[in-house]
Length: 254
Image 1 (cartoon, rainbow, N blue to C red):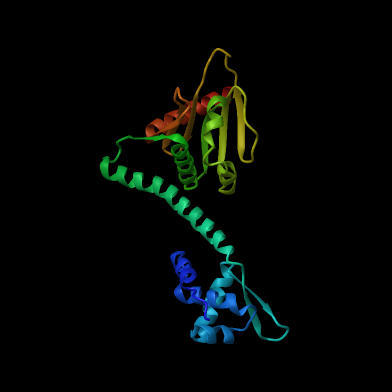
Image 2: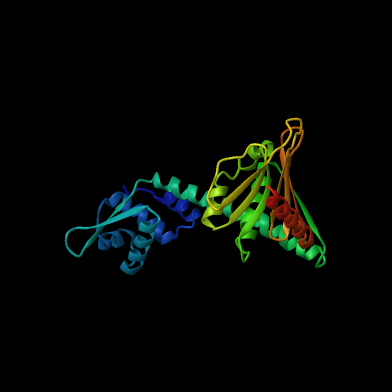
């Protein structure tokens, strides 16, 4: 009795795998290791299209290929458990797109709603909101002539900063973005492309704010009384220039 592969094919099609590719994989599951000719015969798809389908299936990890010692290649279906990997990759891609949309869409709306030269203030809350601010820092700095930002670091806030985006520092380094940090009290671990200086503070002072100056923006990240992180981003070239000037003056005295 011929196996009904309609559910498997339907699942793969939902994952943006073409019908021909899904049908080829489903057929190959029952054929074991075989040639293009036999796969094409089993599916009724012409050999040229079958070859293209197998090539794509090899690329995404659902099929492996090896030579039988001559010129002929034999194809083998990988375990259907590999589909979980495709789902995970799609989820990561969708998350990256969502995070990019959180940056791009508010900027477009703001540009439409605010006259040129008018300061723009945006508010973000929770770990997702802070991750959006961090992604905006990378997005903005990577487009600067000299990719760099400046930060006043607070130990109290630092523990909340990267919970949703733990690979921020690795991404910053990969993008070649430099940072100068004035740490208030204890500092975090050292990292590449960073310079650090410490500003001592009194143990009586409770400093729960983290300020980042990047491009024409100033981000202030803090926590509420219920330990919920939030961020305010001010987009104003004059304000950013002033904060950068003050930072550099303080930096030179430390």
